[in-house]
Image (cartoon, rainbow, N blue to C red; front, side, top):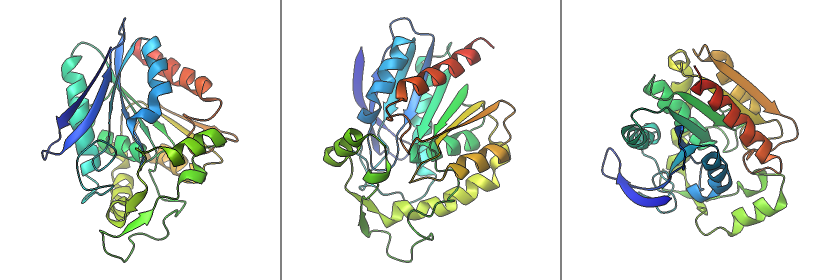
Length: 270
């Protein structure tokens, strides 16, 4: 059973959401998507989670796809974790007796990491995929860029997303994938990453950190540095050989989904 609706975030911005209810639910999962994309690109993952008894909550980050807000624009990096808090609070409210996990990819990985750092103890477990948690690969050059925040650059991320040419082609043709990215959004990563690093000890959730070692957009060293610096006692790191940025869309994705599900199921037994 699926339900789509707009939810008001902390400042009144409408976030487009989708909830897929598992038949025999044992936990809930919130998914945070990456830069310039949308929740529909996680359909295969959501379908697999549903089959394993995980109800799935997804949302589109402000300024992305069907959510409100200036296109691909953030005034402050805190908008990312604070929007996510709105969604996590909703999921926890609807599932008071069951665990709520969090999955974040790329910019959504930054969002998830910042959320868990800012609001410790809020998720039963966090899974990060190709997460921008440092800025070892300067894909946008040195930050902040010294040009006006409302300048828009072409989205040239497509080539680096995946080794599957069909995924790259679909990304380029997807009307919900944003074609322009604001300098304002990009520049929030500089203070965001600095803050994340400075407060790494505050990240104490159980965490599974995943990255493809051929990632052309976010350095896998980001995940290794983050893993080494955070305060979590229960933490695991896996770097996949030969995989590019979107490990959740690579041809071997179902194997990765199984590993994610196994990790969450282990934490249900604790």
